[in-house]
Length: 190
Image (cartoon, rainbow, N blue to C red; front, side, top):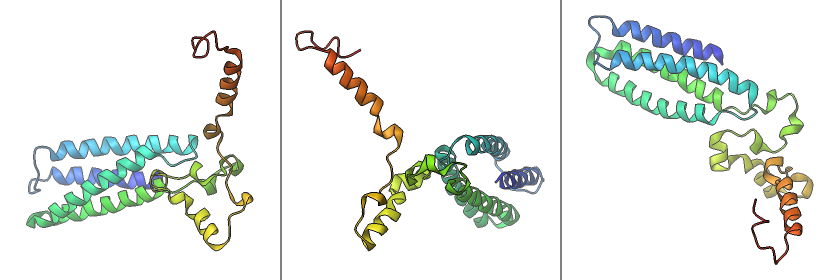
């Protein structure tokens, strides 16, 4: 994955050099745009490596950022192809955009196969990416299993600890028993 970030950054450096050529079509914001993209590429590479080592789930902010900028880059490619003298820049930006699409695919890939202890992440939603959680795509294997055969209890996934909230329920039950009807709610809510 880091190789994709390096390749993408190298293409941005090449496009920065191309924009400094005298015959290149550019606006006042073009060089600043490429510099911001270079800074964002470096930042994304660092954040991505940290995210992959510390989190079992693909990074939602990185996935959303790459998706949005991919759409804008496609519009830039279309615009550059529409300009007669900008075909070399359009080809360079198209290859950078295709590399960005590869980065997007790699960033959204679930990391279940790379986990050290897969038993900590039994439910597929624990390692699902942003789009799978948004569309409930992670439920499809269970729905397919239920379509083929009736779902049994052993087919269901264990509920994650943070969803169960047993500690909160136990704390509520303890406070409920301490509280008497005459004391009011001031002892209950602390």
